[in-house]
Length: 394
Image (cartoon, rainbow, N blue to C red):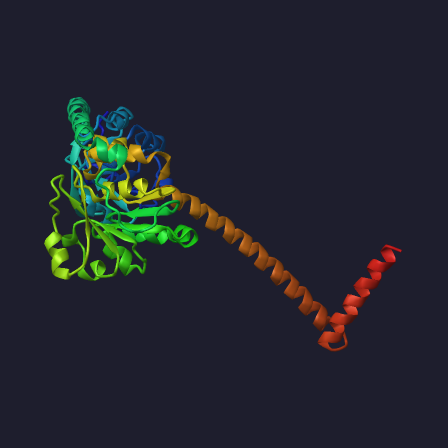
């Protein structure tokens, strides 16, 4: 049986388009025979299984089902379930249709909304998926050998820094026993800070701004206690705000951006280390001076980012985070906790408002229900209730 049906005059697979991207709402409406549109590089087994349970006819991926970074088995699962896969159509396809519109995918991987051609992709077959899987396995082995080789090299050169904090500058800011949030550049930083407001308001943490994230913090109205980063990437107004500035420096002491600091006429300290990650240096600074809790407001480090060779996944980042131990918390965990707390608080507030409203309604009914004035009606009713209780307990 052909993978492609011909349910109308136009060739290809016809169905209802469903926006199953992270910000879309089509996944819960995804049904058998639909066309699922996703944006998921290196699709996982778990996500593939969720799609299989919905049984779409086609899955259109804005990204590649397998980029070659990790050996993922999701594409083979979907193909074995008889789902047609089209990849690499580009992220613009997500904005080219409304969830629930009729669409079509032809045999060459072209995507249509009605009669309108919106994107072109590549049809993935089982041979292609298995080849990418094998290549990714070998690539991952090679990458991890190099990764841990670099980690050993970093330990060899920076063990005094990791163990004894050698080279960490004294900023003059009291950190001992405080909660510290380290804010690094990331695409949705403004939204992330907005969702962290309840935590920041309650804990009053010390704030370290990394690189141009310091600008975002100042613009959002936060007081930044320490800036760690290259001044060339930070606005002059932010650097002149009175915040302590720490410049990442090479092991020989040379710091990029030192000339800018001198031109602005402000003071700064250098932090020499064999890593160019200002975020890692900010973590080491907070840990060495005794922060009780360190919150990472920035890109997370996990196995997927290490396997995928993300910029924040360098060996120094892994070792620094290992040194933080249980003191390091990701901001996503706090957002989840405080979202639930705020919802619970909201429920109590509504319950109290309901009780107050009920009491007010009773007072109005009693006050307006008699033949006398409003106040006398209330007094008479209260006296009647009091006398009734007295008679019960005699």
